[in-house]
Image (cartoon, rainbow, N blue to C red; front, side, top):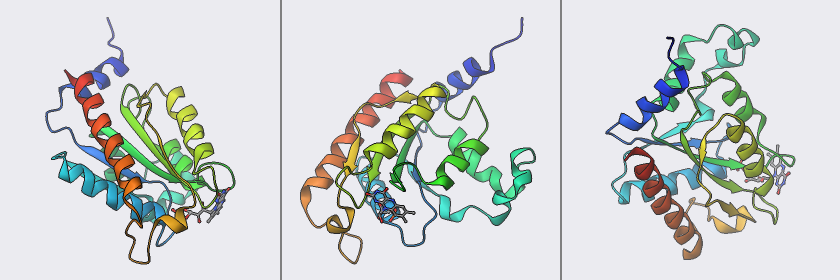
Length: 198
Ligand SMILES: Cc1cc2nc3c(=O)[nH]c(=O)nc-3n(C[C@H](O)[C@H](O)[C@H](O)COP(=O)(O)O)c2cc1C
């Protein structure tokens, strides 16, 4: 009897010992606030002894954007898709662009292998925006897309409204409360991933 590839993918995730977390910087805009917040989140995961790596959409090679990439994945794209497949937990840090997710983030998702990239893979979200809703629309859009792809969505979301006031010129947080919220999400998400693996 043929085996369901989504079940195999799920077992692969659950049998991983290294518990690698991947933080996706959900834009390719140079000097983005998303990258600054992602670095802060990376430090939080490191302080919690959780193996973590960044995946920056700004590093996507130019050939990724050739229309032929849908059918023939460029060689240079494979390390990016592998990072997703080797992750036991994904943290997406994404800004709000025109009331939704940046086009490059959706395009990246559309190029990934399916169903195994998201199927039963734990995922959590941090949204940010200049405006008062703090990326709520972005995160809900992502929940819709990743929910459609059967990801295990962690329910604690973080929204960073008025992002320009939350970061100083060096990319540090201007106050302690956002760090606490990000830390609380990270604590909970690590426990969530471990529970799913046990
Ligand atoms: C293309 C684009 C569209 C944007 N659309 C919105 C928006 O719909 N709502 C909002 O609050 N801010 C919007 N902004 C402002 C961004 O939320 C803000 O500049 C944020 O820092 C962008 O994230 P980034 O620095 O990670 O690129 C937009 C910015 C850009 C570049």
